[in-house]
Length: 188
Image 1: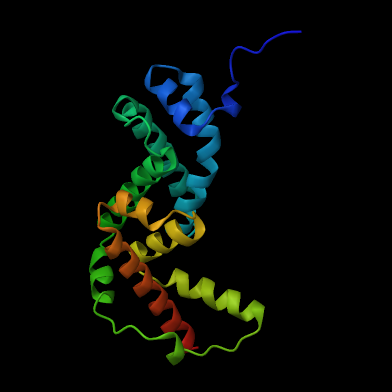
Image 2: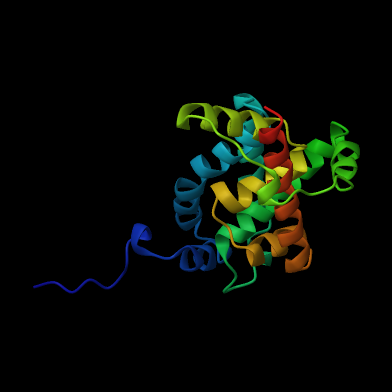
């Protein structure tokens, strides 16, 4: 009977892997890459309007930046939040470069609607298509917030850490995003 002295990398938590990576263990960092690369690339793909090449490039940039900054990782911090913080900042830089911030600021002045004001009666297929189109038409920073919360399932608190905003502001912006989507669906 043999006793197992070490956990395999696949059995370790993200935080254990990051701790090892920060101490120079490249195999631990490779396991983090295996866990997050596809998820991050999908995130970028959705944020960049289906540009697969740009999504792959930005995914590579996330891991390059994370690897270079692995010694500055705060032990015990959520690794997913750390990776998505880097991804979020890369998206913001891309949006800024493409001058999308002006459109984002303009949407903050829109009057929100209540759920009672928006009635949408569509078949399930039409509804999915309409929601997809509404999401694609959102200003990129709002689409980013929606994706972080509803697609990547990050909490308001995690998004607040990523955005360096109060949690209430994140909730407010996500509520605003939902109202914009409702308004777009009501106009169909």
